[in-house]
Image (tube, rainbow, N blue to C red):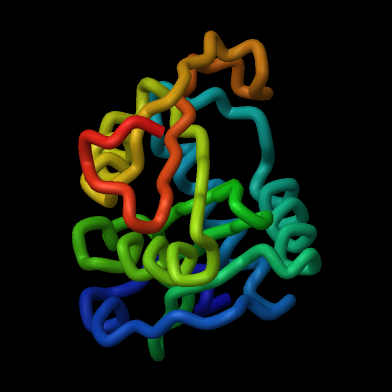
Amino acid sequence: MKDLLPLTQDDKADFHIRTSRPTDAGRVGFILHQFQQKTAWMPKLYAEVQAISFCGVMIDRGWVTVAENKGGVLGFLARDGAEICSLYLAPGTCGQGIGKALLNKAKAAEPQLWLRAFVANRGARRFYQREGFQEVARGNGSDNEEGLPDIRFEWSRGMTIGDQA
């Protein structure tokens, strides 16, 4: 299917943010699964069909916002109230403002947000800190199914870098 193929450079330009639709589950699941498969430190826990099904559940619950353009979905953010459950981008789309746009949409909807990022995911940690999230706690991995140490980050509207949560 065309919408499951990697996107070209032209496909990545001029994106917009919208609420997900059930038909987005395939591409959103593909993005999630690709991160798992291409990240050396990430345990390979799920098949692509399981990732698609999981993303379908999040979409059905109304948690998912996507960034898309004429070429398809470029990334997604899943949010359950103040908790950011997932923020993933299609391969090759980092550094183009897509994650920031998705996060800004969540910030506009909630006065406070929180999330967990794996300690091993240095890029995500830098991104969230750059976007005003503060580290408030660390876990040893016993509370996530991947079994990886993680960090809880929190953001509040009006909080500046250096403020304590």
